[in-house]
Amino acid sequence: MRKKRIVKFIGLVLLFASLSSCASKKIPYLMEATNETLVSDSIYESKIGINDELTIVVSTPTPEAAAAFNLITTPTPISANNVTASSSMYANLQTYRVEVDGTIDFPILGKLSVAGMTRRQLATEIKNKIYPIYLTEEPIIIIRYANFKIAVLGEVAHAGSFVVKDERLTIFDALAMAGDMTIYGSRKDVLVVREDDKGNKITARLDLQDKNIMKSPFYYLKQNDVVYVKPNKHKGNSASVTSAATISVSAVSLATSVATLLVNVVKVSK
Image (cartoon, rainbow, N blue to C red):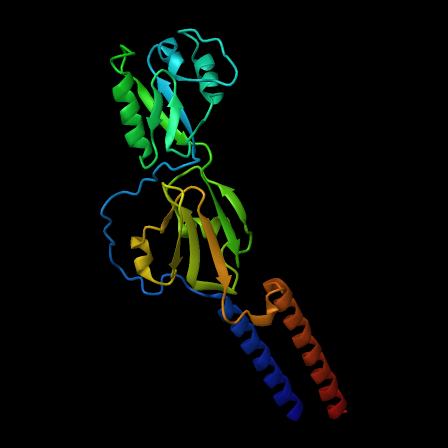
């Protein structure tokens, strides 16, 4: 009977340890979120800043009519009936870097002040300047970021720099790209470093467990933002030990202790 009680006790200890290990990993975000709709004042649109690189495509029903506004790295022959050639030309378009004075040098129009504008605003301005003065056919202006990227550092699974195709990138999207936080990451104090339209560095600290984060101007990230997840207060001296290594060591230690206990139980029973 004594042997059975000891074995049962060991089983309960192992079950408790297993449940505790699983529970420790379930660290939630947005703890205060409820079934409500958070109304935004406007749809977020990223604004163009210094050192951004833009691709600008001017398209018209007659491709050669807009050719002067589409600078390409390698000349591509274009004919009115050759759609493939037109697509190839757009793939080889040069990018426009926003200079420190907030301008780009656009064909025919010259210097354009673009810093602080959204892509839609810039597209409208270019269209109004070239149509119908330079073009008789109404153009379609497509503007994209060529260097929209963010960096995620600190207590995440895969720190690094990430190229982004969609400018509507939230802080949670960025963390997902980096493989989420480790269990040592502080969810109540995440630092975002940003450069404004004038080149100044600004910072903000976000509490990812607060639902009001969705109202923060830093909830949507801008190009070249840096996200830093600092270690929580429990990390301490184990900063150099990864989560996987810690769990492995604990598992080995627990297994060794259980094995030793079982050996002693067998000896006592004999």
